[in-house]
Amino acid sequence: MTITQSPGKLTDLFQLGLDAPICLTWELTYACNLSCVHCLSSSGRRDPRELTTRECMDVIDTLQRMQVFYVNIGGGEPTVRPDFWELVDYATAHQVGVKFSTNGVKITPEAAARLAKSDYVDVQISLDGATAEVNDAVRGAGSYATAMRAMGNLADAGFRGFKLSVVMTRQNIPQLDEFKAIADRFGAQLRLTRLRPSGRGADTWDELHPRPAQQKQLYDWLVAHGEQVLTGDSFFHLSAFGSALPGLNLCGAGRVVCLIDPVGDVYACPFAIHENFLAGNVRDAGGFQAVWQTSDLFQDLRKPDTGGACKSCGFYDSCRGGCMAAKFFTGLPMDGPDPECVQGYGETALAEALASAAPAPRPSVDHSHRTAPSRTVVPVTITPRRPPAHDCDESPLAGFSAG
Amino acid sequence: MTFDLDHAWRVDPRVSMRPEPFGALLYHFGTRRLSFLKNQRVLAVVRSLADHPSARAACAAAGVTAAELPAYTRALAALADSNMIAERTPA
View 1: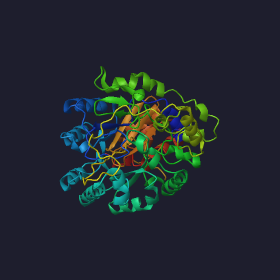
View 2: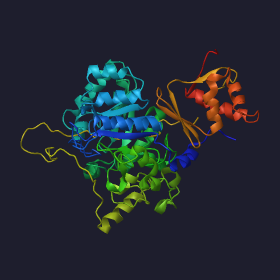
View 3: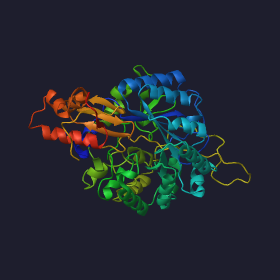
View 4: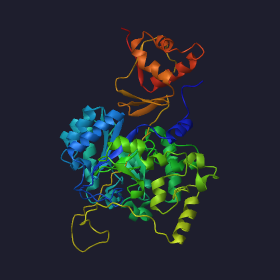
């Protein structure tokens, strides 16, 4: 008899879903001071239908009842909500831990001092280039300086182990060691996540997503750094290169994670803001709990995978067909290979999808700034208000250990 | 590591335990790590650690047999390794 269980077995168990998510991503607002070109929620402008403070507290009460361990709060830029700190305090006072993603705009020395005092709040600073040049091309002018200042404030306040969160792109994969050095300098932990073709990322995917050789470089780097570097378990598609990466190698959408968006819509995952992945709304009768436990969509996602076109591939047990959202927004079938399949099947599938002439689905929701600068150069000097995409973080099982 | 069954243990106060049909999920707010218990009996053992003078006594009270004890010891050792449970001074 064994009490401990191998991660492989655990994957089988989680595949059928849990009574409550382990953690979930909750985007508090679509408002953002930036306009990152790869923002997975196409954020920019606040939506007038966003949940009120009272409604947010009701959601927190539900999460407490369901014993959701923590929420990954994002946006938009969550800290621009006037009730942001009030909601953080409310959550932690109700046994719901908070990890929030920010571009750092509101992380003043005072805010940093307050954050450093709590065991139940963690912070992720988003930075997508180890140099201002690489970062600001994606996140907007000045965003590198903002993030560095925020990290300086956290470090000065004595906050150890906050996260430096990076979405891996073609442009920044050569900077892996530099990102690690930045994290080390601030006493932070590096967290790397996968770029998805979601939100505005659908428009920039072709320019930003890593080349095949870079995928291998990233995999080797992740293997070399092991558990020192967090990944939100988002690179499980790379496990088909060889040995599995640490964490849960399984798509957790609707099984162990989900997304609540600013207007209360519940989606299967933060990368899938599209009506096809919309399970319900927290304002519906029964609230979030009913959506999680009884929605048709989530029930369906919890059925065992068949493997589809990938079933005969020898690496299927490693990658499980990859990321649902990455397939969906590149126009690939759900039961086939990931567009970045490291065995090369994704490229073949993409070529076939392109030949079929059926356009890839578009994100359903867009709150981009109407005045966001176009990406072509215009002959006037304005400060570009581009973007933070907060990288989504449901990393349900990051750092998971079997006990 | 070796696990001292005869010592008094307790669940770390920063750990949240959530019962599941298969046993339980544990989350440590300090290390931000997740762990899990595979069955109801090991959950009963872990939950009652603080009420017994030793881990051995907690196992016995939960009905763990001598033959099963090595497996439970390994599970407790893994939980101690990840700081989910810690030694305490017996009352």
